[in-house]
Amino acid sequence: MIFFGRLKDGELLDIRQVDRTDAQVRLSMTSDVLLDLTSGRRSFASAWLGGAVTVDANIFDLLKLRSIL
Image 1 (cartoon, one colour):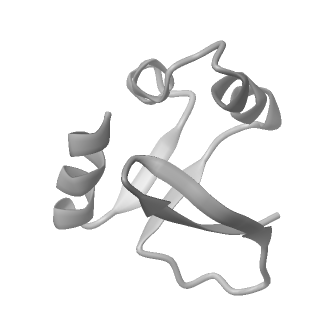
Image 2 (cartoon, rainbow, N blue to C red; image 1 turned 30 degrees about the vertical axis):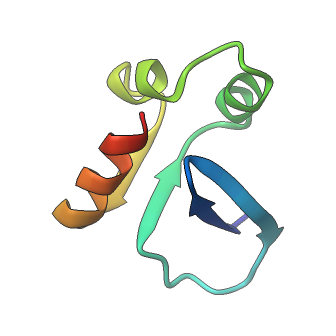
């Protein structure tokens, strides 16, 4: 499944399922990791550094993402 959302002021907004595949930043993870992240049981930084979340983005978007972690 593919979901779309907007990142604004460190918050992910307007999350919805979509058919399109064009994205500036792509995050891949299992459903268990997603549940842990959304429930607060796990931080994004630890999931990313531990390899549970993969990020596909250009360097400028990665720098923006890093600033909110």
